[in-house]
Length: 308
Image 1: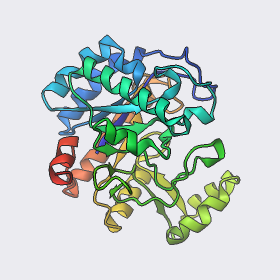
Image 2: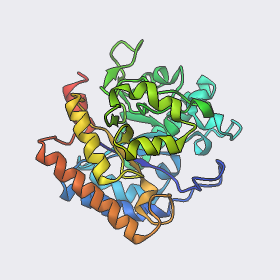
Image 3: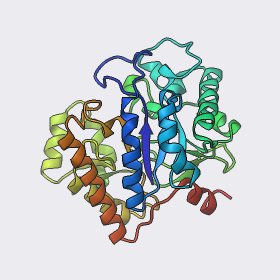
């Protein structure tokens, strides 16, 4: 599954600001959609409020969604999603930290805006910054959302007040307490290297020592590889795919951020050359997956084969 965090443009190194709602890069969404269609890939755009409110984004993606060539889902950035009631700070950037009724209302309004703009009711959700909380699952089911894809396995955001996903499984699973009504599709990250079986023990101890993590990766001892073109080379991603296949992971969940489709909005794509390399990354990955008979999955595929 290819998931795209379709979101506004902002300074990744700066504070969260309600005013940062630029969507200039949506002009590039049409090219990316055509690219995916030519590759036989069905992308899942997880849309936040500034994108959902963009008439141009609707014009770019609605035809593909209507024709069944792409999916639209929800991505909640609480600091730019109405109602705008909470203080804007790091802790509140994780929507699961908000009062349950406010988190619910933000998801509800965003769902309705997405349906208005793109002509379809979204069935899949991702919390911006992967920020789920104790009542997120209940809110999603109440709103008719069948799939969550907020869990970023092997990552820990607790130092900023967010969730700790270090010990969450890579395999899809039913969210506990939801009576097999909410399916979790974790983003795929794996440990690679001679010490990968000890990764759960070793890697968290090195989060304050990035040089040590880099040294272990250089020596081929231990490396954490998320399946994304942002900060991960093709060679690293291919190693990650091989590990996931060897471990029997049934769904490879890839992701990246839509502002990377236009130079200057993310740290990963600063020039047109960087953008060419991003497209080359996807070409190499898609070709490798086809060579291993790994088929692209849409939300409809998941609903049809898993959620009955």
